Length: 311
Image 1 (spheres, helix red, strand yellow):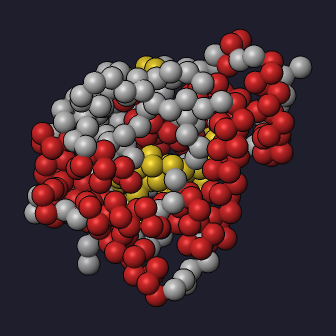
Image 2: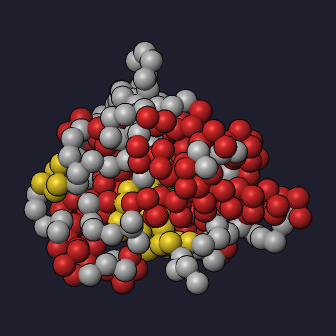
């Protein structure tokens, strides 16, 4: 019997450092980071955006091999059908219904079809990369629930948390999207209220997904960038890592190599190294008004996660 492919799934709010965590895990022997798999059908196959290696998705040898293994080539992949299923079931508003499985037979069939094709990609990635663990930084709590129905995988959910004020400040900054081949494109910009509400609902949803049997392990961005080896040592049994593997990330600058990632933070195009240092620009640059808005909307969770208000 073929052993299940372990999938380390990073869940959390956007701008919480998921790309950084994925790149660090992808640097560990036996792990392969692929960015945000749930975007492969549109941004990879359909739009042919750049892979993290710098080549377009369809020209990337790694992803070409994955497509051949999973579907006999990406031209045979049901990407139009997967995009349709994604619009129907892989949406935040569907989470309450999916979390109460079983659902109506028609919905269950759509979920199982979506999950089956997702599983084919995960297993093909593990085969091509010769990796025991596939790291997916898709973040979506809905996808975390669907992941439990993907055949042939062993999902491990990592709930990554970052200070809501840092997240909101990050959403206020204009960031380019280097993966877009034609013309200039930029990531969305959110105001403080929108960013705070998104942060709160994402984290609450991940906590609530536990009612659907989705066990998750928490880690904080701030601890990760300051003490990565210790944080990963704490997660060793969850991730199936050895002490030697976790210790590889001890240096302030980590060699992560070329990674074949779909979607994610522009940092994945910044070279083969990751510098472990906290991004705390919000402490000096965020306006008092914006900080009060974010704190007012996220205070209960901020306190629950151990963050303090500034004096």
